[in-house]
Length: 347
Image (tube, rainbow, N blue to C red; front, side, top):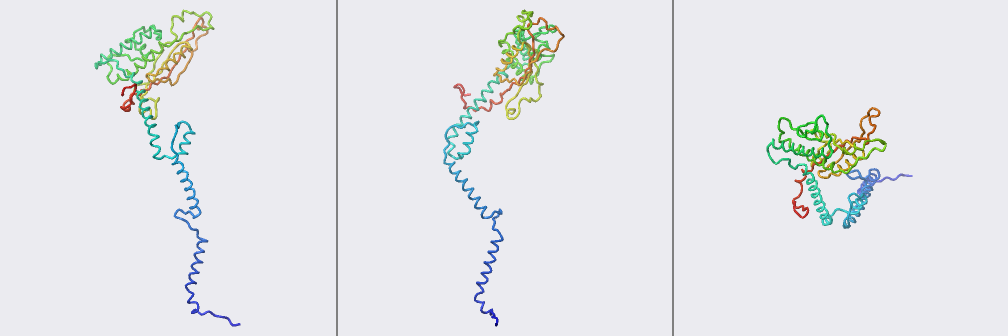
């Protein structure tokens, strides 16, 4: 059988279609073996999935945007916060609803600042109006002596017989109450603000200790106790006041509050029966002007004594050490807006 041959001239009219077919075959091969990706490397399937997800999110946002904010939400209630953040969308519609609340909070904050600063103002009440250093020292000594005399008469201050009752120059007895004792030189003007604050704090603590209603009862175990010992002694008396050293940074405050307030720290030691000491601590903790906080305390009995030393003792004295922090918010007064009205008068 004789083979057939194809003449090139016969194929020439079909050259275009032959080339086109080859190109199509090549493209199909590229599509099959070379996946199409975008600039991020995502295939068409992934791109479609992402678009579907974003579309669903957009639908949810559209529904949230149509929801109008209503009701009151408690910022401390987790369920309220969940509803607020998941069911609503922040839009211009919120403005008319939120503005009254924001304005109310702003006024409340200003009132709080005002209250804190006013309650702190008592610590800065002047001891003497005179600008003379000698006159200031004289007035300070006179006023501290008056407080100590009142404490002594009320049996809140017990005096060591060795030193006597020198309330003017007795450094030891004055330090027991937390007061400064003038030496040969007058105090400097820069010392007056801190001495004034300390004086006002002790003045306030003295008032509540003298006003505290507590009675020492006889120890029921000591049948032969001397009841007269109870009649002639105060149930609680001041044994010592230790101030944090002047100029030493206070560790009582930290963070934001340390930027707007100052703290004064002291350790107050009292002596008396357990019940009376607890009553005294309760009275001290009620002090709100100035703002006083009992940050810690330790109640302890007297040190060990020889056997029989407590015989015929009607009342067993104990010691109470209180760590006290007094916070001064005087600096926040300048932050109060002038349009705040308190008690009907613009402050």
